[in-house]
Image (cartoon, rainbow, N blue to C red; front, side, top):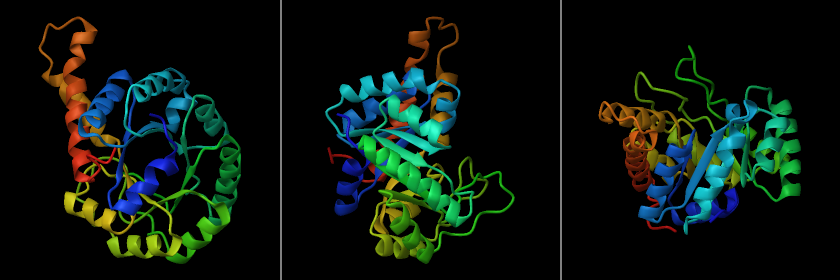
Amino acid sequence: MLVSLSEILEPAGAEGYAVPAFNVYNMETVMGVAQAAKKLRSPVIFQVYSRLFEQGKGDYLAPVILEAVKGLSVPAVFHLDHGSGQDTVVRALRCGASGIMIDASLKPLKENMEETRKIVELCRAAGVPVEGELGHIGSTRDETASEFTRVDEAVQFVEETKVDALAVMIGTAHGKYKKAPQLNLQRAGEISRAVKKPLVLHGGSGVPDEQVKGAIAQGVAKVNFGTDLCCAFLEGIKKTAEGTIAIDLFMNEPIAAVKEFAMEKIRLLGADGHA
């Protein structure tokens, strides 16, 4: 069943687990995630990266997500990930998104707050909660990492923008880590207690399990997984028997691989049985 971002995150924060947010790219990745959520009775977030809406691919993917969600008896969110601006946000809303992320984290604090606040006001009119980002969560390819999110700025950001969830920089990055990251869990806890909003951990792929659990204990209620889901899908393709020509049969192994990956992360976050 389709619910809003706030509806799915509030119970997680109150009960001490986190909701997995999986970036999906095609029907097969949607199917794998849906099957995992159904099997483990877990709330789940289907995320679509901003680029897919910018290229028109989100228009095709959105109906697949909504159909999958309609067939689930567990709470599920259709979420825009790293929304690049108002145009992309509007496209996602028109396609049925029940959660929106706006990412203006590369801009100075004042400009980030101004843009985020405008998106919050826009989405409020549609009844859709918003996730903002403070402290840029970059790529594992970046030469230097961004500074950790400051507590005082986080408080100011939340008060000014009225976001419903906050993505923070505490040591993660997007992509494949060359070396396992070391998260600043103390900072996460300080921010969580100060802003009293669900925190979001981006770049969850490759973060050691104990650090993920530690982040949840410090107020993280949503953990994003993109890179490792893609890798699971591609590994599933490699396992498909040579000579399989029918595409529906060819895709069975990748779907199963995504399902297994999603189930592993659902259990890690403690979300199993919470639907």
